[in-house]
Length: 138
Image (cartoon, rainbow, N blue to C red; front, side, top):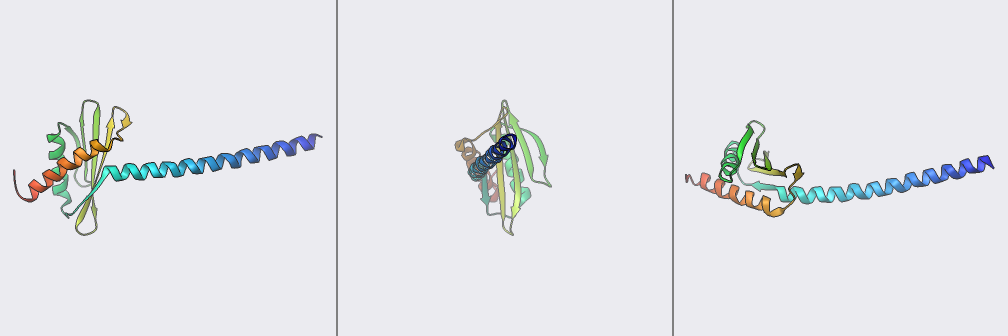
C-alpha cells in the first residue's frame, strides 16, 4: 500500500513537472515574439557608413526634442538623454560596409515605452537631421 502511494505520488510529480515545462516553452516563444516586435519598432537602418556623424545627429536630435544629454560613449555609439520622467538610450552600430543600425530604447519612469508612435517621432526627427547634415544645411 505504501509503495503504491509513493509510485502514484512520483507519477503525479513527474506529470506536473512535464506540464510546467510545456507552459514555460509557450511563454518563452511568446516573449520572443514580443521582443522581435519591440526590436522592429525600436530599430532603423540608415544608408551611411559614417557612424560618428550619425552619433552626432542622434545627439542633435535628442537636444532638439528637449532631452538633456546625460552620457555619450562615442567609441561604442551610445547616447543617453533624458527629460522629466523619460529616458532614451540610443545605440548606433555599423552594419556591413555602408550602413548603420540605430536602436532606441525609451523608458517612462521605470517602465519600457512600447508605443510605436514615440519611436516613429524620434526616427522621423533623426532622419531629418541626417538629411540636413548630409546636405550641409545648418
